[in-house]
Amino acid sequence: MDRQQRIIQMFNDISPTYDRLNRILSFGIDQRWRRNACQAALQNHGRPVRHLVDVATGTGDLILCWREAGRATGTPIQQVTGVDPAQGMLELARRKVKNARFIEAPATSLPLEDEAADMVSISYGIRNVLDVDGALREFHRVLEPGGHLLILEFMSPARPGLVDRIGRFYMSRLLPKVGAFISRDPEAYSYLPESIQGFLTSQALVEKLEAAGFEMVQVKDDTFGISTRFVARRPPRD
Ligand SMILES: C[S@@+](CC[C@H](N)C(=O)[O-])C[C@H]1O[C@@H](n2cnc3c(N)ncnc32)[C@H](O)[C@@H]1O
Image 1 (cartoon, rainbow, N blue to C red):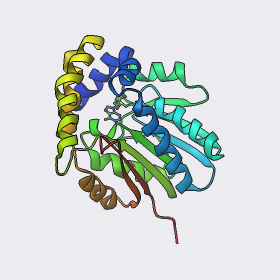
Image 2: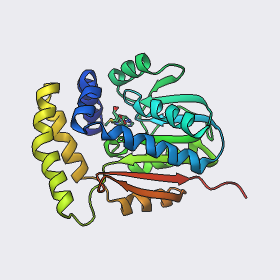
Image 3: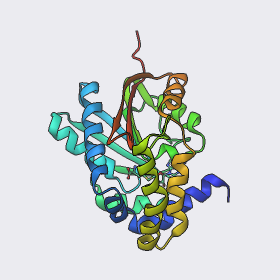
Image 4: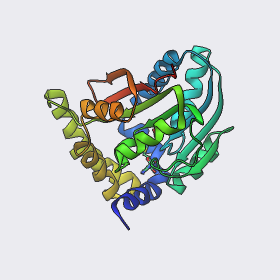
């Protein structure tokens, strides 16, 4: 099994406890990050969403937030597709999220036509994709010109300060213990802090987005930069 396959297998293994642990480990703040990010993306989009594609959808939490944000901003969201390579996560998503179709696939190879979507999102997923450039190219391909991309992620800090050090202590010492206890999978919850430390800074991701053909609309840190939101747009046709 290669490294990417091992990551996907790990998400399959922890899928039964994933939702409960997410709420406990982030004290529920993650739901607010998701909701605010969806609202910001919809406000920038400024029109009904024809087809939303949520990549690395996991158990489908972000899709529920998209719908809530759609109601809050009066923006209808018509067709919804969730994509994830972990079958265990998708089974839970299918039970939890109605009126959406779910497809098993990695971010780097979306089984969708060119320009099939006008909104693409990925929350806390891009960090697990080893070929980030390949995934961003794929998001650009499936988005129609003028369509938006929303990324939420725990980025690696550019200049670690006091808050980062506290955050890192929580992530590297406390979180793996609580996560291992509840999920009974110690490896999975030591992977989380490691994957954040090894990931890109916000600036590096912006450079990759621009290289893939996106224009940046918004980069915003939430809760002292623990989570960062990126809204980008595939430039419209002239
Ligand atoms: C931390 S979970 C996030 C799930 C969900 N988006 C959320 O916000 O709760 C990361 C997800 O990324 C998926 N994943 C792992 N490798 C991937 C890849 N190469 N392409 C797409 N998704 C991947 C995992 O299966 C998992 O469901």
